[in-house]
Length: 422
Image 1: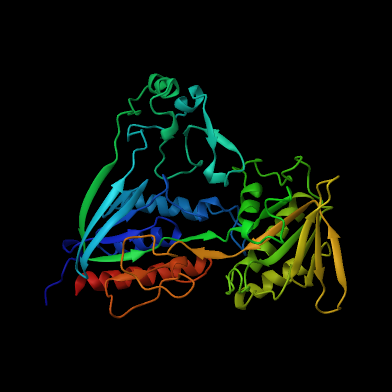
Image 2: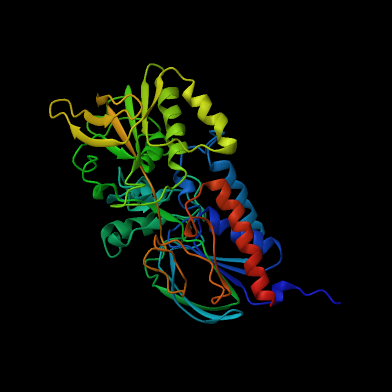
């Protein structure tokens, strides 16, 4: 039997360029398939690019991202569109017609990331990469190892003197102020939905103080505070006054396992808080961290990490769900009320900072992408034998961590390849 070159088949569409989408695209492309990768942000890497360290090895994500970006650069089988969204999908397995809207970044491929445009740009905008905790120039590189390594001009400055200054400052003809949205039409044979997740909106949990207490933040905000390229250059400082934190409380299951918010467990929040407790302890040796929890879910290979953090005498793990968080009006210290489930004691604890462990909400919730998919009651995509050709990967499928997302994405790549071969 003659070999069939799958690169002659229709491409695979991967929606989402986070770790799941990136892995799916690379695994499929390295097996010989053509891939069209679509990402709505101006960079690849998704939420992994925003974390400070992986658990349990406590290493930064930059090494893994750098390896994957190098694989991307070498592989001609991947057609990548950033600042892009899938507008429409029609057809069936083996023969989909897809329309992709590519939004202008006003910077072309001549960009060398020299930063001259940012130097002359006076306008500042909210820094979405840092979750709105600081400002950035309206001519910006999303982060220090962004892929593609290209600046972006915010639409807010197009038509202003700032845009003209950016144009004049560029020695490489990389600024293109006349860029317009572009529609790209492609035919694909299968689709992988890797649209990732967003944190549950902590403002909806009205007893936890988020939005009313200045020094109550979420776990994803904590990652950015601890990151060297974050809003405080890696110093964990409380938002109200920039003070170094000496006492931090982690409130687990903030909205999770709660019929009024997220009825399910996201599975990764306990490990994330254990990891973040080490951030505080490493940075401030005299600091104390308290974790209030319902159950600590650190199963299997994560048990050693749990025991390592628990053995720190300045880290306390107390079984009890936080009932209320209020603010001391004089000091701005958050005050936490909780009942110790094991002793029955009611605890009122004051801290410099409270970190809410909010759960994972799939971006498929409400079917925001124009693909006919089947989701469970929580918005996670489920396999539907009546809809072959469309597959989910990573947190579009279930709450999961980075390592499991990578494994899952490899499986999605295999299924997508099987579809284009049928």
